[in-house]
Amino acid sequence: MHVYGLIGNPVGHSLSPPMHEAAYRELDMDARYVTFEPDTDAVARAVDGAAALGLDGLNVTIPFKRDVLDLVEPDDLAARIGAVNTIDFSTSPPRGYNTDAAGVRRAFAHHDVRISGADAVVVGAGGAGRAVAFTLAETCGTVHVANRTEERARSLAADVRSELPSATVTAGGLDTLADRVPAADLLVNATSVGMDKDETPVAAELLHADLAVLDAVYSPIETRLLREAAAAGATTLDGAWMLLFQGVVAFEHWTGRDAPVDAMNAALRSGLR
Image 1 (tube, rainbow, N blue to C red):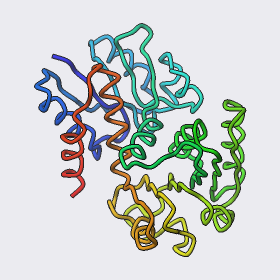
Image 2: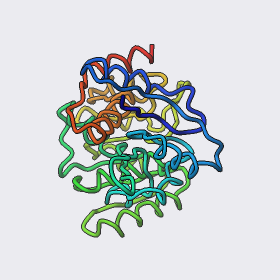
Image 3: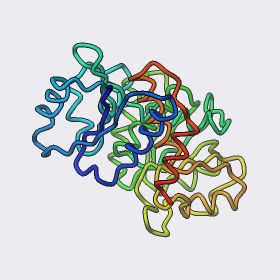
Image 4: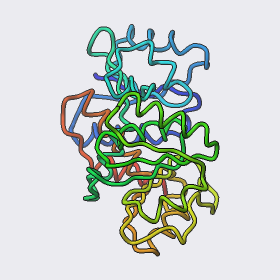
């Protein structure tokens, strides 16, 4: 039997187990997906233990995504972002990936949203914001990072430009959204604004029909930002798509097989009801 899992603290709320278990059933795989919640100072021992027990792979969530970077051999993108959310134990040392970034690309592609050459705005400069900014900077024409703390946005933009010298990346406070969003092709909310509250990080009057909006928040599944974007005629992508496709990419790294996206999506959305 193959065993995969999730390491984080806390993990009780995670929707990854039913999503991955659905994939195993769909493909008739002899596999299980389990969760682990080590103490916050025990991640190195936990990863070593997982390897010693013969686990095939681990997803990594808060607060360990940066901690495990030194415990694996990260691929180029994970090293640039400075965070790992997927570990593959089939190699020695284990290989580390950041599938959050790939999940963003796959989510846009699934909705036929073209990101190559696009002008993008990313709201938020935390962990999710880093993954989004780095992956969009690889192909977008421009990326603007807006954050409540302007210094943090500028630091992220500088990190991206350092790793991707050809990228055009700018930054500013949330007040810069008024200038940037009306001319943008893509907008990603990578903050928690709107989670379980009827709030939005972007004023409705800035949204327009030529915009594609991805909100990383998936509780509720339709946030105020997405409601107002849809009312403006924009293409909208809820946060479950990003969650789904980071899991899809992790599955494909671990198994070398095409993931059953429809089965995984159905299981994920069932858990969000």
